[in-house]
Every structure is written in structure tokens, then in C-alpha cells.
Image (tube, rainbow, N blue to C red; front, side, top):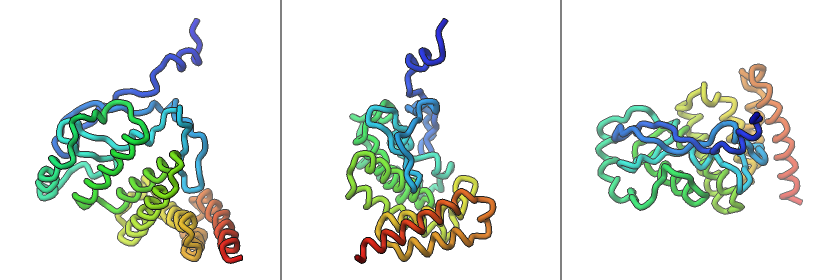
Length: 239
């Protein structure tokens, strides 16, 4: 009799997901990580999931690259594209498409980074929502954190923070995916990590006073903890 642990050991952590390209509408398969194999080494205060180097990393497959046209996107992208953006994107495809790379197969850190940068490029090209760009930049920062590349992590945390702020200002986020109070918390925590302690305290206070605070007690408690952390960080910086 084969037990569940034996079956798990013999199972491939990756599977082929069927996906349709937003641009050319090609249907293809690309690798994803099975949910039962998603086991982060730790989860940081900005929700960054950090995985052991030898474990499956779902962040590597957050972005999809169409093997036919090269358009690169995530599930957060809009499902339809105005013709003006479609034409503009197709004009730019030749410069970005590298057919020597198969993005639909297993990826390493470097290939994952490349897919995120392509997705960010295309998101900007088609004027995707700030919310979409924020989530791409934030996750790319997590990948760099897992690689130990602090300079690039900080660079993309800063970009993510800017895009979250614009998303909050223009309310272009999907509250079912990420409620407003969580966006405010993320802005505060990214400000704290970037050393902008006064801004961080302002956003953490806004979370604690938010009209939905009783509904999202978890985020309020996190904001209170990180508020205290930001105060301590500020004191250490100004000794």
C-alpha cells in the first residue's frame, strides 16, 4: 500500500497550466507550482514569501510568457485590450521576443527575473493599472530578497511603493484581491523598509483609524507592531 507521503515524493511539483494569451489569443501550457508544494521558508512583514533555494518557488511562475507572440503578463492584467494598445504592443514585440528561451518550462532565479521585467515593460506599454505594476514590482523585490541582492530589492520595493500609492490615490485596485486597508499597510511597511519612517508612521496610523478596521483586525494588529518597529528604527537611525 502506497501512503500519501510516498505519492507526494514521486509527484512533480510543477504542472502544466492551460493559459490563453491576452494579446494573440493563443492557447498554450506553462508551468505552475502545485499548491501542496508551496512551503515558504519564511513570510516577511510585507508578506514576502522567501523559499529555500532547492524548493519550488511559485514566484518564478507568477508571470506568463506567450510562446507564440512573446507577450508577457500576470493574472492581474486586464482580460481585454483596446485596439490602440494591441497595435502598439505588436509593433514592439520584435525587440523583446527571444525565441531561444522557452519560458513555459522550469525557471531559475535569473529567468524569473527576466519574465518580471518583461511583464513590467508590457504593463507600462499598455497603461495597465498602477495596482498591477505594484504587485509585479513587489514580487520581483521578494525574488531579489531571496537571492540576497539587497540593492535590487530596494530598487523594486521603491517602485512598488510608488505604484501602490498611485493605486490608492486613483483607486484602481480590486478590493476583492487587495482591500484598501491592506494597500495602506503595504505602503507603510515598504516606506519603513526604505527608511522613510515618518511616512511609514502616517500610513500605519491611517490603517489603525480605518473605517474597516474591525473587519480587518489582522492588518490593524500588524500595523501597530510595525508602527512600533518604525519608531525604533527611527531612534536607531538618529542616535
